[in-house]
Image (cartoon, rainbow, N blue to C red):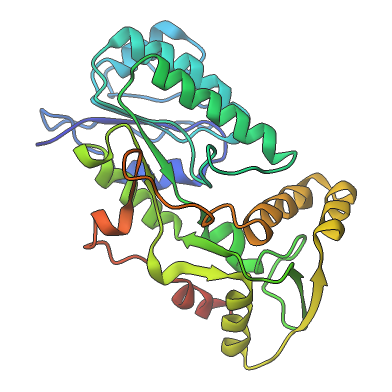
Length: 297
């Protein structure tokens, strides 16, 4: 069965661009949408006007012909999804809504600021979706390759370290990594899967679960060199977060939550509310951390 999907992309979100090439057909075989311009407007068909997230009437018109809405708005536009929820509720025929998530599970993590506020905004969107009874799937993809691996999660770095490395805590908590293209693949597979309806889709591919200690050891093996470890305690990283620039602050806060607090793996998936992607879709030949790091050697 062919389904029509609208991908909403506002801001600089790589996931939106990755999802769009997979979304091409409506039930009658016509083009479902085109790539949106950088101002955040989107298009359903070449014969229709551009829709606008901030224009309720045009938003309703764009959503009405489709079956599934996937949001990939940027973190500064998360709360604009309340407008999307209102339009979906009015249309009344959307079979699945994927709000923007693409990170750790916001209901399971306990981050500090500035990530705490971001988690809270996404959680508010979740509660609004549930309150309106909108069919949904939340995608918890954990760490994306592109954000963490090219620098080995080192703030301010532009390449993986070859001399020394900030080492977070004891390096034992496990983190989960996924390539952006694989996140898009799993998302598209879930759009009409009844097993993912009203649940969180967790991306936990077994070959991509590493502690920071294991990740560093893998990198050292690839470059044939032991790095000097600069061990960072919890108190030290909290001070570093206070002193850091905005860009480095985000990286440090995320590293604290993931590599020191273990927020991605310190809980079991509740089968009543969540499913694991690599178990549902074993046919997906996902990229591995080990293969990805080869390009930087």
